[in-house]
Image 1 (cartoon, rainbow, N blue to C red):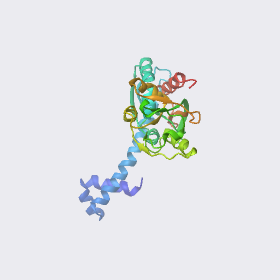
Image 2 (cartoon, helix red, strand yellow):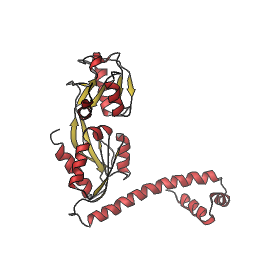
Image 3 (cartoon, rainbow, N blue to C red):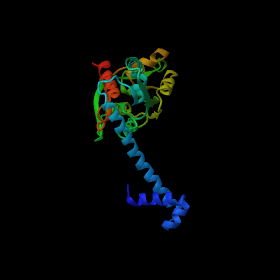
Image 4 (cartoon, helix red, strand yellow):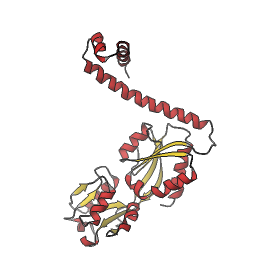
Length: 268
């Protein structure tokens, strides 16, 4: 934040309009508008941090109290689809005074939201290296190759040649695992990006192609029928993590959620 931005803001406030302020400052209105937008973005970041500190202060007044208040949790869609429905229900039963706000996103979006105090915590499938992030391992997600029985059994990477492969877009750790496996066996295959497990499963069950998904997603969707699963020892399970902003101190609702996560998936 620059002092010139604050002076510009004051001139706009004193004269009641950007046009009048531009005349006083001898510049074009668009210059003031752009500078004010930058100032607004910076203030938003400060506002989020201030509100987070205020919430922390309130929680610190009663550290032994039952978890309550608003808890904002995010997760990648594979976790939201395969692992969390039962856990979220259990958390709500244990802590009915907590108002859960749940959302999904890519791992990079979720990390940014945790850093920016827009989320209290998130479940991702990559090892976060951001300096503001703390994390704990929660479970490893085995991977399953899925296909309709109509395309035949998949016993080796070369069986995927000439097949349509549906995966989440670039950056997805499960996609990276598949690409690494195919490259290791010198298999060239085109991958279609689809940012929805529901759509991916629909395409696979219709016999349009195959996909590699976390076992939690497979367990949820295999009940719809016409989907077979195949596992390979070279496709190692992917570690999932719970992350939070390490600059946030006492947060009873978040800590209780992290504890439930670890207990619920112990051994996975």
